[in-house]
Amino acid sequence: MSPLIRCHWIQSVKLRPERCTMEVTQGSPLMLPHTLQELLGHDTVQVELIPEKKGLFLKHVEYEVSSQFLKSSVYRRYNDFVLFQEILLQKYPYRMVPALPPKRMLGADREFIESRRRALKRFINLVARHPSFWDDVLVNIFLSYNGQDVQNKMRESIRGIGDEYMTTPFASQAKDFLPADIQVQFAASRELIRNIFNSFYKLRDRAERMAARAIDNATDLLGFGKELSALGSDTTPLPSWAAHSSWGALKQALKGLSVEFTILADKAAQQGKLEEIDVVEKLNLFLDLLQSYKDLCERHEKGVLHKHQKALHKYSLMKRQMMSATVQNKEAESVEQLESRIVEAENAIMVMELRNYFSLFCLHQETQLIHIYLPLTSHILGAFVNSQIQGHKEMNQVWNELKPKLNCLFVGSSNLATPPLSPEERHFFSR
Image (cartoon, rainbow, N blue to C red; front, side, top):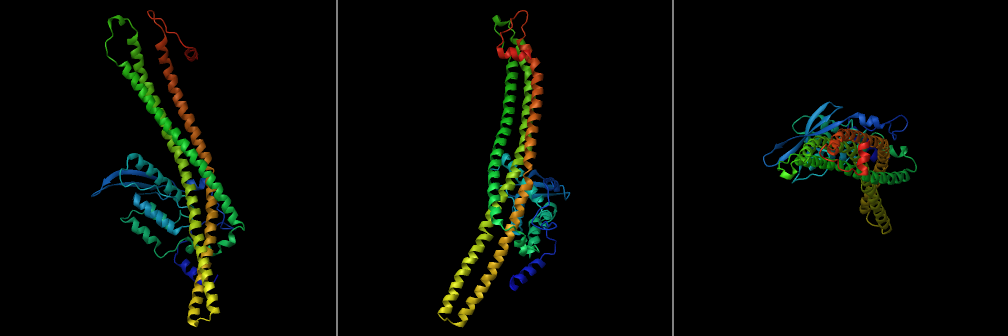
């Protein structure tokens, strides 16, 4: 490391007195020691919608954000989340910072507001459970600061402080911790996670459709029961020739069936909601994490790697100019200026090279974090199976309670022959 860069690095480290939040284990700081249970258990943050407050011109949505770990509860608006994410990206450009749901200025209906609330909850939980973030003063401010101007407080927290590279003591030695084939490993991991993302995206879509079908089924069952009730409540008088018809008794029986269909509708709706919360939301959480990894890979390629290549190209051009000036015996002052620019370019290239290795270092850790989260698959499948078992069990119980009431519709009386049963009906009533 050149004296100029070393001096700059030492000064940047002194800017931040707080301890570094990067996880360092005995041996190599490259390896993360965490388990999924540890990550999920570190904190649980609730994001709940509070009643709309009418401003002078526009109504705005506000959220109550409650951290279990910090035992705090604060009010935040969507714009607070936006600034928080922007600052987080400034401090941790080489980490997985989840994306936020889009802002919708006009026509935000209840469905959109609820969808955004869930997305904000996933975002803040992924942040609060990230080992590089959970001790950060910025996260602490967002989750616990109850002052008047939280946005100004967040801005103040990064004033005079560089990004993670500038504040991590061993950032300039990141290359020493990386495996020799880091580029090959990175390419393989990126391809693997891209494939996992595509499969989980399809799983989420299927799960959403199943949950929606359960809710649609609830609507249909409720409508079916209402029609039976309407049929049984019909007061249209019977013609004289049908005076001895069994229609009156049948109507009474049909009217009574609507109760069970209402219960069935309620059970189906509960199952749909349970699948939305326990299955779809967990899939969305994992997809948000995978998407943040994909975004990080793009930042690495378009950011530090691109700048490094650009600096190398610029340096190459200046070296050629220097050679040309030497050959042409240009003025000494012109040559000195060119030499000074070349030294600056060399320093910039060295800094970019160090940042590139640090970016790969962080990418290696973030890849580990993805693999730590992979067992979440078993949690999702378990929730899916349990929701199906519970839902079908409760529905089956109601159907069985309904069955005896159906029998009376087909048991004949002394003045009315029993209507013939189909083979399927005979099988049904013989059980």
